[in-house]
Image (cartoon, rainbow, N blue to C red):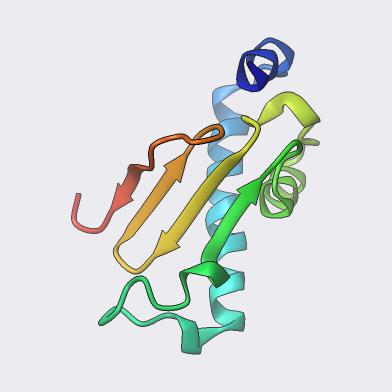
Length: 111
């Protein structure tokens, strides 16, 4: 139900805004990773995965808000699905949307 409300309240974004957000989010994640290089272990991708988790409960995660600001717009409460989690691990990024959502691969090295 919460994600249905989220979908209705979203502010539409242009393709240019979406691309700028994608680039900015990648930069935000890179900055985070550089702050804790000891937690990035390609030989053990799940090691310290908690430090690379981006989670939004009833508002967008801070990382998403920062990326939006860097992309030139403000992310509003309903612009991102509620209760969403992103795991950034060596070689793979997964996202689960909504409470109890199934984690889906959104990026995988080599694909």
